[in-house]
Image (cartoon, rainbow, N blue to C red):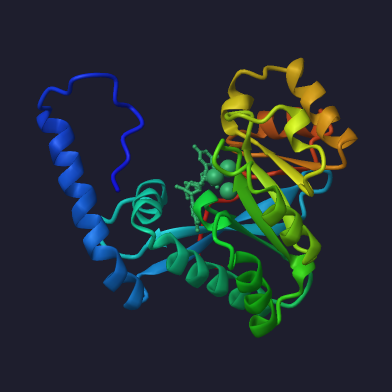
Length: 254
Ligand code: C2E
Ligand code: MG
Ligand code: MG
Ligand code: MG
């Protein structure tokens, strides 16, 4: 169950790693009851149209509402390994759609999906059911799928989700595995450029071509991790459509 992708030969006993394994097992054991108690909540970070500064949507980000709890990077990974991600992911999606539907207007609600959820044959029906029950129009839901080797084989699921009328964003674009060729025929409506991209981007160069290539493929582009006014200006000048980052707004309850 605890897959080791980093096994490279005989393993020596490593007390640091053993402690880490114990911590993960403890988290794994605690999470189901925490989910039942409603301890997993969502914060929302603004998605801003760079041309005019209007908030066109929010990204839902999971938080474990308990003192000293780990961040989502850790607890989502644990949930993926134990399979709890299916129940947790459904609960978070439903919470986001319900909170989004309660807001009037056309604010886009963007929710992260794990590649493990993509592998669930019931996912498309679950998403359709949640939209139906919460009353959120499909066009106001965006699903973010991180660009990983695990996510991209699920072409049929991605296409079926697109057919529901929800938007699909390729998250952390530029950190992973996809060549632009892999994306052809997939209904991604948006590419979210990883913050790491920004750091080395300077005043354009490669970044300008990436924005243009995404546009040519029919995707809008969001830059993640905008932390300064200068970065915001550079990205606006590059024709980047949307921005997200501490400079534009921090994650907070809706
Ligand atoms: P992500 O989807 O790429 O989300 C963006 C992350 O960048 C968030 O971290 C956000 O708080 C952070 N961030 C936003 N602006 C800035 C900035 O200006 N500077 C820096 N340094 N960071 C910024 P967070 O909330 O800790 O989430 C981490 C990752 O955990 C997410 O990355 C996503 O992959 C995963 N995650 C979070 N919530 C969920 C969820 O509900 N379901 C799933 N499957 N994954 C989730
Ligand atoms: Mg995301
Ligand atoms: Mg992500
Ligand atoms: Mg991201």
